[in-house]
Amino acid sequence: MRILFVAGPSPATVFGLASLAGAARQAGHQVIVAGTEELVPHITGIGLAGAAVTPRTWESLIRTDRSGQPVPRMPRGVEPERRHHGGWFGRLAAESLPGLRELAARWRPDVVVGGSMSYAAPLLAAHLGVPYVRQAWDLYDTRGVDPYAAEELRPELDALGLAGLPGPELRVDVCPPSLRPPDADPAQSMRWIPYNRQLPLEPWMYARGDRPRVCVTSGSRETEANRDFLGRLVADLATFDAEILVAAPEEAAARLRETAGHRVRIGWMPLDVVAPTCDLIVHHGGGVTGMTALGAGAAQLLLPRWDIFASTMRRTAELGAARVLFPEDATPETVLGACRELLEESGPRKRSGDIAAEIAALPGPAEVVTVVERLVV
Image (cartoon, rainbow, N blue to C red; front, side, top):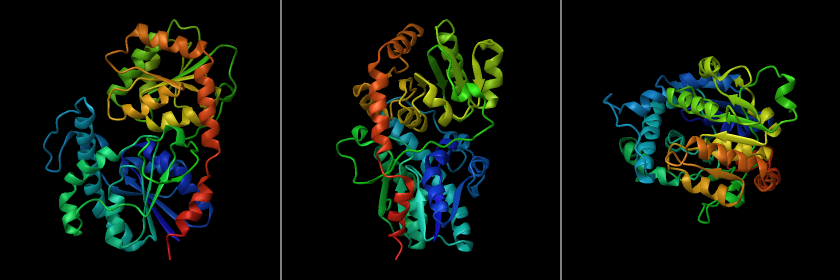
């Protein structure tokens, strides 16, 4: 069987799909992961076959519309953020469709698997008349984005004679049941298995010292905003009595090392290896980072810049596994205070450990592959 996976705009979306794609490959199926040109090195870097279907970068999709005109910067507020996300993820789908159709004309898939907001996947599956599987990249509920993506994709939907975005034949959800919203769509659960780009291990990555360990990260993407985010956090935590790790792409790491000093370890590090050694992970609210922290049983301090996925973050906090500080509340004093509480109190790590056990008990990707196989007659 041939299975085509359609990634999103960032490396995290590749890592989110990797466990199911890898399991399908191990089961003997032919697998290709399609994405933007800038994503292909991340796809091939974790051992999967990668095909570029558009040269558009994530930054250009966010900043400009289809005609090349500037798009306003992302606003604050749940609905404005959903509209903004739906617009640029829809533009990604529109830009990717011609390349996907060309790929499918030469290598026709039996199933198309798309991530949470890989909107090209259902359109390609409808065009080909093959089953479509929607696999959640992380724990966030993205249903509120779908109507705005459909607005952006109205020309493509009309060309296919579709009133709206096609629904999947199968939903695959990696979010642990205790964190799912009460009205979540029925889905096949799947165990979260973290993936990221690897590098030769050093002992400190898998063995901790005698001080509390705090990992700070803003994800796998290098941007000026992410560099600023990390820089502020490192400065806030400089006097904290803990071992500080800063997980960042090398482009950001080089600049951070100039001001952070020699006591902080900074650079790309395999979070799947490092996270289980950490007491606390402080991050930007990224879904893949958050799932990896939960799977490792580490407490979390979430410092999101946006409101779009606030409800899921608050559920994690309500269960006692995390604290959430939005920009208006995230002063150096509140950040340090939250870190201290999360490290000194045993409850957050215990509750995160409970969620980790819940994740570990879910069906593995190999089991889910057998469910996907049954979609093909």
